[in-house]
Length: 117
Image (tube, rainbow, N blue to C red; front, side, top):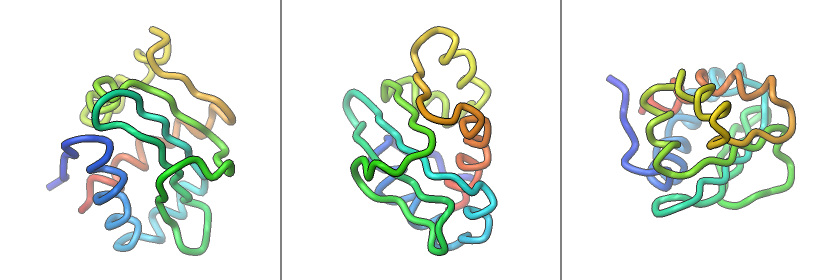
């Protein structure tokens, strides 16, 4: 059963590092480095490296992200429970993608992996 995060902080500080440690091969299949900038209560900035030998998630912007996702915390939590919402948020201007937009299409794999804690 998938674990639903209580907030972006819960997701990136607890669930993602555990999922990456438990499933490094699945993480490397995504083969990208993401930056997440989540605004509002429960938000923050993180860099998730799914391309390295040891996939990891660190607080802050390392400047190495190939694709950066910027979204409000409320929209982010909705997107986590319904990944198809991402395109809708994007076209509404509520989700910004910078860098390689094709990598944003791999986010569903990332969310599935993060939920496997």
